[in-house]
Image (tube, rainbow, N blue to C red; front, side, top):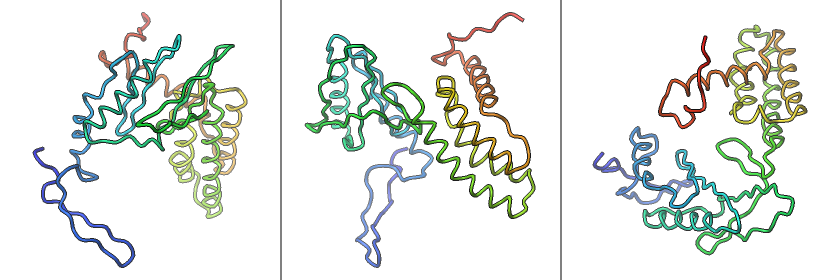
Length: 252
């Protein structure tokens, strides 16, 4: 804990050229069991100063704010975050930072650009957050299309294994590990609100895999319901969970 990087050295190797060796004095090595804990301690005081929320997951930080009556609290929150990073020897990568504005009013207004250190943040209609595509109109077609594309690419390998005369149990294991895991990624978040057309397209990929394997596979809907139930029970078991108060067991 005193100095995880003490005595560690590094160099850069490009082609046949190797740079001189430098001794590390800060940071933590990649793969070190203490690295996540140390990063959590470092970012513990990175909290919202105004009415906005900070969502932190590993090294991804998201600022969520409500803009009403041209309130600039959201912009001040981003400025405070940039100030905190500067005070802690960190820098925000503006090129990787995106802004999504969700405005469902009939007469929407143009919001002024968001800037970080005099650099304008790109405003996009869709962004990828922890593997899930979130759009400005809160529809899930973009996310579903991305998942289906990945799943269909893997169907090719499933077909090749089938032609190699592998038995259905092995094919099913491959499907669950490489295709089903992709199609159902974060399914409790988006499946309940995606369109009927998107659900049919997802299920069509599962049906194709079932024909290749020659054995029935659980439907996307069944997986969604099972995971929602599992998530609900896990939340109810933890009284300190932020969503614990939303669940109440019915009398038997």
